Image 1 (cartoon, rainbow, N blue to C red):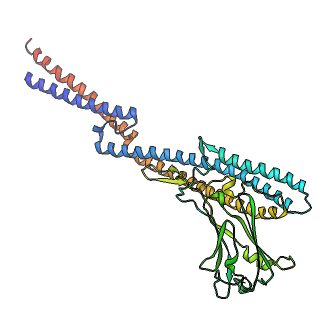
Image 2 (cartoon, rainbow, N blue to C red):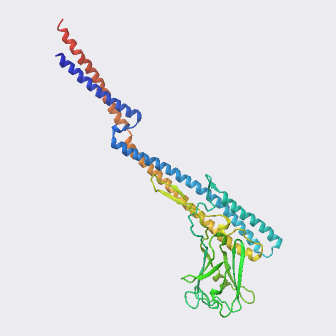
Image 3 (cartoon, helix red, strand yellow):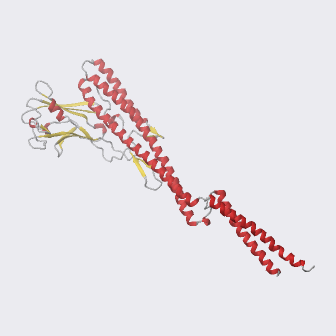
Length: 410
C-alpha cells in the first residue's frame, strides 16, 4: 500500500516537472517574442529564418548603397550644371566677338574672359569629388584600350552616281534630294576646324577636275561612308588632337558664300567622341542582397580638352564664328552626360523602392517563421501554468496518503 502511494507521488512529481518545463518554454517565448529561440525549438525553421534575415539585412544595405549612388550622381550632375552655364557664357562671348563692330582691344578682353572660363571648367573637372573619389576627370570612365580618333559624319550627298564617292567632281555634287550644290570652276572651298583651340584652315580653288577627294585637312582625312555621307576623321587618336567644329565653306569668285553648298557640305555631326587611353574606372554599385546584383555607372571626362574648348580662340571674327560651333558641340556633350546621369538617378530611385518592398515582404515572411503568436502562446502558458499548479496539488495529496495509513496504527 505504501509503495503504491510512493509511485503516485513519483508520477505526480514527473508530471509537475513536464508542466513546469513547458511553462518555462512558453515564458521564454513570451518574454523574447520569438517562437524559435534555439535550434531545438525548430531546426528547419531556424535555418530558413536565418537565411531570410541575411537577405533582409542585405536588401536594407543595398537600399542604402543605392541612396549613396544617387548622392554621388547628384554631386556630379550639380557640377555639370555649372559647366553648362560656363559654356553658355563662352558661347555668348563668341557671338559678341564674331561681330565686327568689336575692336581688337574688345576681342582681347573677350579672349581673357574666355580663357578664365576654360580654366574654371578644368578646375571643376579636376576637383569635383564624392567621398574623395574624383567624378569628372575621366577616372570614372569606361576603359579605353586604344586612343580613339573622333569621327565626324556629314549630310548625305549625291554625285555622278548615288551614293556619292570620293572620286566625284565637286562641280557634280548634289544634296540628298538630287539638287545641285551649284559649285562651279573658280569657286573656293575652305575647310576650317579647331584643334586644341587653334583654328586650322585649308583653301582649294575649284578647277575642272577637282574631286571631292582633293579636299584636304592638315590633321584629318576625308572619306565617304557606304550610305553616301562624307566622313572626316582625325589622323591621330586622343582628345589632344581632336578636330572640332568642322566647317566647309564654298564661295564664288566674287567672295560671296554659296549657302546651299556650304550648308550641305558643313552638316557634320560628331558621332564618335575622341578618347584617351585609360583603365576601367566604372563605379560599381551593389544594389542587391546577393552576388552579382550590381549596376555600373560611368562618367566621361568633362574637362575642357575632352570637350574641345581647351584654349579656344575668339580673337578674330573667323575664330569666333568657328568657336560658336565648337562650343555648341561641347554643350551637347555635357547635356548628353547629364541626361545619362539623370537616367541613372531615376533608375536608382525605382531600385530603392523595389528594395524597400522586397525587404518588407521578406520581413513579414520571416516573422511568420521566427516570431511567436503572442495570443496562442499566452493560452499555452496559462494551460501549462494551471497544469503545473494542479500537479503540485496532486503531489501534496500523494505525499499525504501514507500519513492516513499510519492513523490506523494508533
